[in-house]
Image (cartoon, rainbow, N blue to C red; front, side, top):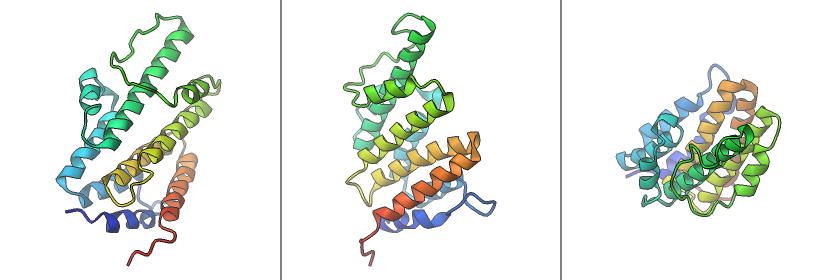
Length: 196
């Protein structure tokens, strides 16, 4: 049995800055994995698949869209729709046939479609990626909004760690800024909650 209260409340204190002595996003992810049971680690694997382009297949999405965990099901639906929107935008931009290379699965309603389309039209590539990551960040938060001490909270945290890690590799200063924001957000979650 996982002790979500302990693990989740300990997340912000793992590191506050990106120094040599601080934990990296991958170290934090490893610590979360090691602190959780087999069932939760299987859930976490679904997110790993979502961030590994070589694993993204129609079969994976079909299974994910029927998953029993709400966060996994809805996040993977969002991911499918986001990726399809990117492909459609690219197709239109370079004059390719509409629908080419789109994942042939109906992702259902895509609430963020207009916001994603606006971000994709941004001419600055770095700014465009920041906007798309902000949409993903917000979606992860929405999917775990009323989950405080369960696996969905950790799934949200892991999505954010993946985003931060990507920026840490691309731009260490931006990654550090995003990490501080994540720590402050998690801290804010526990304001007014008596942990005893």
